[in-house]
Image (cartoon, rainbow, N blue to C red):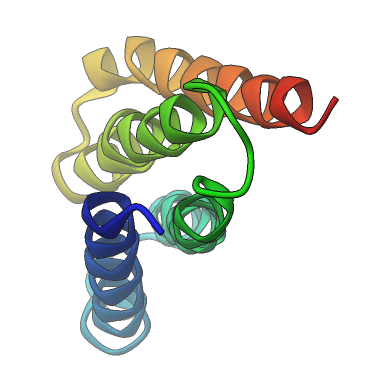
Length: 120
């Protein structure tokens, strides 16, 4: 098992749950419903991909090559860029951050493609 990737996945999971709780309890009265939905989308993809990072750590030793660890790190990058930009957008209203969000989504997609490639 790739311990560094497992640690990254665990930390991503921890922060995803913490941010989800913060959004549900601390932001509901402070954000508009639209911005709260943006924040919740960030949390949803954050937690999904934290689980994906843990899964890649678990299978990294079983599948040869670099595709699985690369997928895991792309998931981490996607969390930072996709979810992070949505968090900042919701909390600050800075719409310029919207340009970063698709790059994070692309990192997610490439990560999933690499994982499929490794399975083949």
